[in-house]
Amino acid sequence: MTSRLTGRTVKLTWPDFLGSPPPGKAKALEGLMPGKSTILAATFSDFTVRYGAGTRPLFDSVPGTTPPVFVLRDEVTLAAVFDGRRSWKVIDHLSDKGKDFLLDHEQGHYNISALMARDCFIDMMQLKARTFGSETEGVTAANGVFTRYHDALEKVQDKYDWDANNGEWSEPSMGLPSKGPEQVRWESYIQRALTDERSPPVIAPDGATYKQRLMDIARAGINARNETPPF
Image 1 (cartoon, helix red, strand yellow):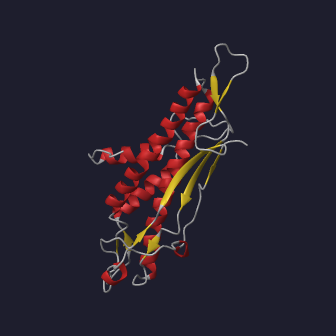
Image 2 (cartoon, rainbow, N blue to C red; image 1 turned 90 degrees about the vertical axis):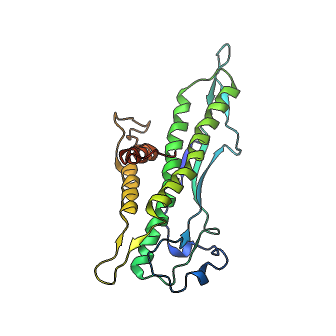
Image 3 (cartoon, rainbow, N blue to C red; image 1 turned 45 degrees about the vertical axis):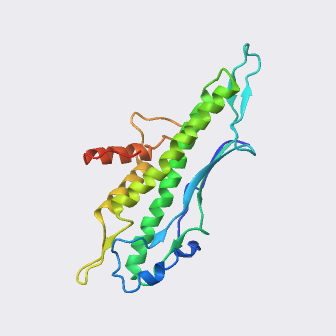
């Protein structure tokens, strides 16, 4: 088994949202103008890590080393996941365009989880080139990489929701509907994390060039607005 990253590209559709909304949510939204500031859907996404068949990082001693040194076993599986049973929506009152805009916002939540998983995986794979003086030292390093990204995930998701006002959009009686500017800004962060190469370039073992970390892009954008990034 070799290390792998799964769930990088998942395209959400509304039928994927199988969960029930909070009690009273649908009734409370009766007559609501579309696109206003309220939560109309929730996406539950995350990323997980496995080392072989378990959850403890696996390190092997390098043959012939005295004292022994240890390397990360190439059996790391990082997976971005979407929990459709918990994810819910209240969209019957929305226009088709409103439904599309809101789904784009929810897709952003999943994409954030997938990109954070990708960036975590890249850092985890860089541990393979290192040697450690003990198995415990290696386990601490691997757990540190995962914890750093996983602890930041919720903060990134919350900042996305806060800035984009839960995917708020404009749907005037005259003129064309449009996404909110903060939603557009975050979508640009996500797109850049998918396409923009790191500078200076960092080459993966397969010859591909690693893309910029989502957190780095988002931090730079937040700092440019004279705000303090929460992650």
